[in-house]
Image (cartoon, rainbow, N blue to C red):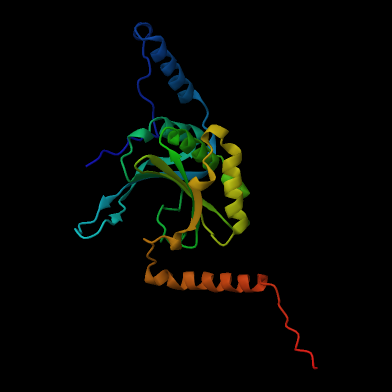
Length: 257
């Protein structure tokens, strides 16, 4: 069984205790100690929302005749309440050690990275496929857009950012941005524009390497029976909206000869 990446979101260890110990350290170790001491004494800068980190270790179901995967979500560490908490988590999470088909998610409190969850069921996500060589850098910037509320600020009224995720594939990282209401086209367009504006050119994915998809359109989506009426209600609303936007076509009666 693969080992999940370690996460430390509270407390800092390894602080130098005496001058003699500090003198025995290398310059790099002294700089690390200075940074840890600085973070320890720094006044926390609270985030607007609380955030949780989830690790998804996907294992094949015990069925010899298919290749389906079952998600096994695990909440890691304490909730993130400040900028310092975020950087402690980010700096101590070895993204490059996450195994094939495993995922890590940073989600707002109250949301979980499951398509069929009641708060996500009407939502969707952008997926960006990036090479593993730049995946961790892109992932850090996307998380910063989430933590810093830039993504939330561009969403349409009554829409919400749920969270962001990174999944490992054979030669790439899939980085996702989830929001709550897939009927908000303004939100969909604004998320993409926000990401492309923030990423430097060398990290920006090419057009054929990103796409948007509603959660319900995934082949593995299975809505629980009690939430079927919610989906039906949205379908009716979207059908009515599309009908209202259709141009009215009139046909004149044939002229008499």
